[in-house]
Image (cartoon, rainbow, N blue to C red; front, side, top):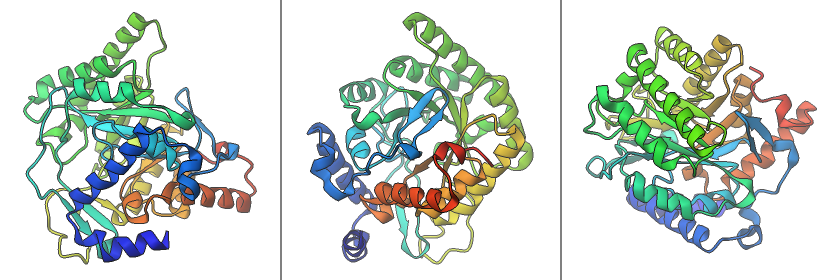
Length: 364
């Protein structure tokens, strides 16, 4: 871990962030293709500990920490991410047609703030190529795979449901759950889909299509979750939660990146895009706590935002999260991040006298 941090500070931090991301993904992609085993990655692998197992929306997770959408945009490195200790991997966000995303540069490190600003704009290979990638992926260590689905940049809001339904249809037999991304700040107009009328229309259409696909395939309906922005006010959040419950969604992912700008030290603080990392930790935890309170703990929450340590993860679980996701913490902490967080969670459980994580998650 110290070696990674030294390397990151001395070398990687001076390179283009997107180039570094592509290189890291390339390593994980190679690991996936070679079907890397636990032994091959040595100390970076998380040891199986039954106390970390969590059940949510009909699925069993070997541990609560997952890789957030955006890291593996094209479903190329599921096995590699599982091998370094993530209990689930959310791939995407994918759209029906390939799209390049926004012009570069579009990722900015805020080293002094332990943060990242990105304005990627859903670059991806399109759902057909994405499906082929996902179909080829190995599923080692019981990893759960979620697919984040979105609308194309040029798709009008009134036809957004067609994009989500198309992605759901192509990927239905390959993913364990689906995340409906309506909260990225980097696709023009997308966040308007969080308004009550548009969201209700979208979710009803997608949920109905999911049930139709499940009936056609003679399988249980796959869990559908919606990912929300941390910038919603309480009235907007209440609308989202009411619609989610009424439409039968399986859970909420809280949260996406933020457009808000707290006091920041980095020279890149004014760049456009979504802010993630340490400045998002407290806002996302407050959102988790609010969602848990307003739903009475009946709607599972995947907590995301500013998780760098086991203590950060524990805080979100105690606030009401059932599962967790990380991206920026993984970037800054390195390949042993998931292992270290899991080991730390076990220590915190032992300190609290908790026999299994199931006693803690979603408690609020």
